[in-house]
Image (cartoon, rainbow, N blue to C red):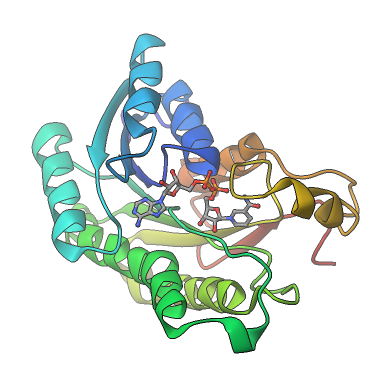
Length: 244
Ligand SMILES: NC(=O)c1ccc[n+]([C@@H]2O[C@H](COP(=O)([O-])OP(=O)(O)OC[C@H]3O[C@@H](n4cnc5c(N)ncnc54)[C@H](O)[C@@H]3O)[C@@H](O)[C@H]2O)c1
């Protein structure tokens, strides 16, 4: 068991990549907190893990709200006693949109969920991890940070901000034994990617297929485990060669 007795919070784990990570972490012995919007599938994901013999708890949360994130962390500490892994994964995408048509409101929503959510999730766990003298913080970036696609302008910008923030945090938190890493998925088979985009994306991936959520979950598992104890500040592309 690679995460035996660890406690992990995973945001956006009611679906897609976060769900796969929650299920994979549970298989390896972690107690997982499914942190997702109240109307998400978070409850079902937690129930599924429990019925397979794992430990999971759904805590409804909007990652853009500091009070809700702080409450998420407080409940986790109260019920599980510690937080070993914080995986800031929740995010939204956008349709291909010429920059002239991107509204200020949508820009703010994108940055709030994709970037501010990572900031709040990181900030909330750091005091506990500093006190413990250890911890792992992961975030889901995107290949659209190092290898943008046309028309995904502010999505790419939000993920570029996440990658830079994670690297900065890796330096700031290394003296406290806290490792900080980012996973950059290529187009992945989740509800986020629509049918029209799929075939277009596949042609740009040298390995010739979309990623599966389990590809990201296995990467997150490795980075969260002690096997990666010398790895911090990495933005790891899981992309079938897309960024070459
Ligand atoms: N699917 C891809 O092709 C792809 C590629 C690169 C990066 N990513 C990133 O991976 C992450 C997960 O995406 P996915 O593909 O699993 O998508 P998904 O839509 O399947 O899951 C995203 C989850 O985030 C949750 N969420 C959205 N806003 C939230 C909020 N304000 N508070 C809490 N939870 C919220 C949703 O309810 C959903 O359960 C995202 O950060 C996304 O940008 C995805």
